[in-house]
Image 1 (cartoon, helix red, strand yellow):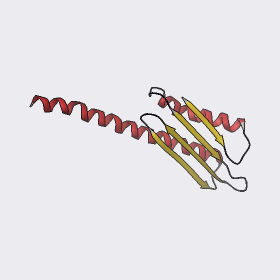
Image 2 (cartoon, rainbow, N blue to C red):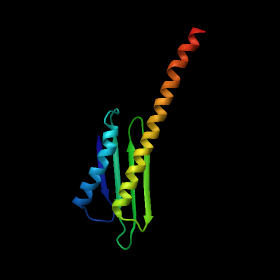
Image 3 (spheres, rainbow, N blue to C red):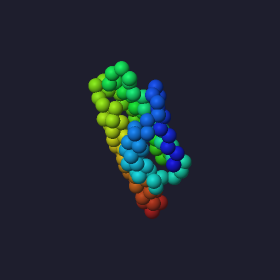
Image 4 (cartoon, rainbow, N blue to C red):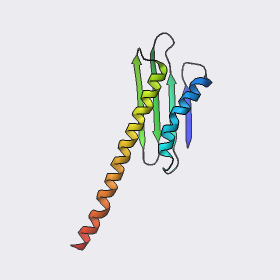
Length: 116
C-alpha cells in the first residue's frame, strides 16, 4: 500500500501528518484485503488568511478509483479533513456493495440458463 500526504502552501507539520495518518487508518483497514497496488494520496492545502481550507483524497486500486475533496469557508482544518475521509469511506462502501451485487447477479444466472 502506497500512501502519500502532500502539504501545499504550507510547511510540513508532524502534528497534522500524525492526525491525518490516524484518520487514514480507517481507509487502510477497509482496503487491507484488496489486491495490490493500492495508492492513497492526500493533499492538504490550508488557507493562511482565513478558514477556507481545501483537502483532496484519492484512492486508486484495481477495484476502486475514487476522489473525495471538500473546501468550506468557516470550517476548522481538522473538521474538513474528517469530512473528506468520512465521505471517502462511504464511497468505498457503496462501490464495494455494487461489486458484490454484480458478482452475485452474474454468477448464478448463467448456471440457470444452461439448465434450460
